[in-house]
Image (cartoon, rainbow, N blue to C red; front, side, top):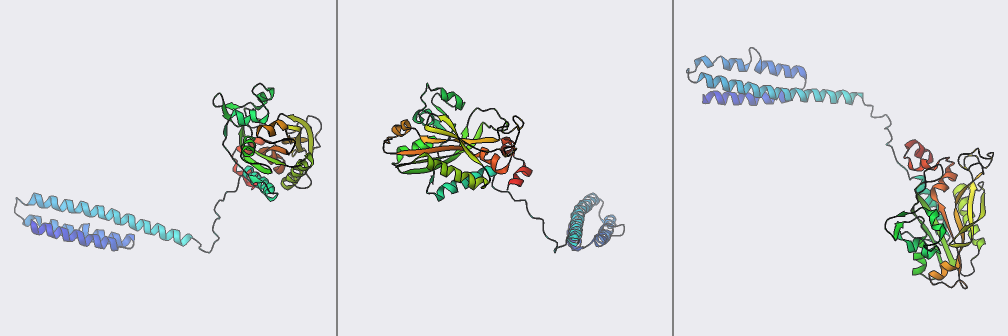
Length: 346
């Protein structure tokens, strides 16, 4: 019995080596026939069982069957390896290594981000610093310090998201103007980009989460002409020299005098008959944001003497800038994550 066990072990070892060395299906079939076929090596060993004592024959048969089972498993593994090599060879033969590769899909900067960066670059070239701050602010920085006390009716127009009785998601980036003025003495020239939040209903011109770029300049002898020159230059930077810009008188608690800054409607190009353009409502213009001279009460709140210093401030909605720059007729497209749409603007 010991001799049979050793013989079977040697047979399995030779079988494994021959199966691994087979380089094709026919070669592997020859190995199978040589070892497991009707006249193969295993059959020859089976024929010797009759020469063994009767008591050893059952154990010998079981040992041979176990060896056959192991060899068949080894054969399956070798068969899988042969098939895999055949597939790889076929695939390699079908590949033209000289054919140009498929270019990987590459993303791009989101158009909103691009406008923010280009707006900030414009002001930085004129000596402004970029400042950023928290998106949740106390009502003092959002309203009180901006000449909007708790009983002021203009608070209602902001439709704010309140987190507590005194903290809210900022409806504008103006808190950074107050924080900067409190920390530094004039002259001050900053631009404050960032997210803002208002409970506006979604439509072609409004989002409840949007981005703003605000600017502030405070120094000696600053007047409205400086503001108009800087904002006209920004619009020409973003839209080109052919885009028209207008300053329309308005009211904001934190500036006096104040103006709305409008630019030509990107959809109708300012030529729509009254009421026929879904984007501008037929006016021919879309509002970019507000601007004006910093109110004296705001200057006093941060410890500046309005008799000595003056300044201007503005706030533009970045998505509104995107409407005009890319001639998009619906502001919601900037948050829809449409790859085809974004690719057109890249």
